[in-house]
Image 1 (spheres, rainbow, N blue to C red):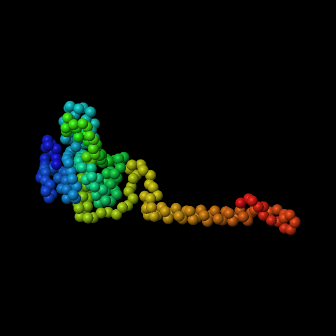
Image 2 (cartoon, rainbow, N blue to C red; image 1 turned 180 degrees about the vertical axis):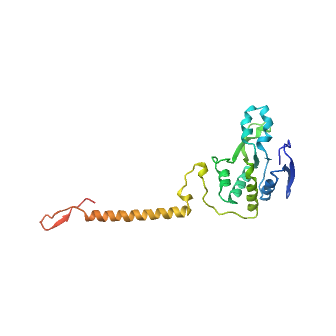
Image 3 (cartoon, rainbow, N blue to C red; image 1 turned 30 degrees about the vertical axis):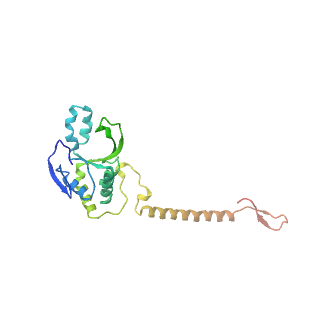
Length: 230
C-alpha cells in the first residue's frame, strides 16, 4: 500500500485477493513482489521529494531529503523482506546491481534496515515492547527496471548459478575463492604448492644426508657417520 497522503499519482494493483492503489512507478514492482508471494507494508517512489516538506518543521531532515532524491522505498514484514532479497539476488548475475544491494560501501548502495519497533508508538497507554517487525529497503530509482526483471525471473522459476562478484568498487581484496575456479581452483592450487614443497623438502633432506660429516670408527676401520644429528 502507499502512504495515505497520496503524495504521488497512484494506480490500482491487484494480485489474487490483494489489491491497493500503488505509486505509479512502483506498481510493476509491487505487482511482481505480490506475484512471488511476498508481503509488503508501504512503498514510496520518490523518497527524498516526498519528505521535502518535513524540512520546514524538523530542519535536520534536510540532509536526508537531499541524499534520497530519486530513491525509492519498500517496507516488508521481516520474513518477507529477507525472502525478497534472496530471490532478487539469485535471479540475476552478481554484477554491479548485486554489489549495490548487498554491500554497504558500494556506490549508491541500497539502504536495508531491520528496524525494532515499539508497540507503544501506536498505543501510548501500553508499556513499551519492542519487536522486529519491519524490513525497510531503499534503493536508487535507476535500479527499478532490473529489480522488476529479476522478480519476474524468480516468479518464472529461473535463477542464475552462483559466481564470483567484482568487489573492486568497495575496495575489497579478491580472495582466492573469488578467482576463476572458485574454491576448487584455490584448493587445487594449494595442493600443487604443498606437493612442490614436499618434493623440494625431500630433496634437501637427501642432500643433507649425503653431506653428513664422517669420523673414523673406534677400530680404525673406515669412517662412519656422526650419529645423533638428525
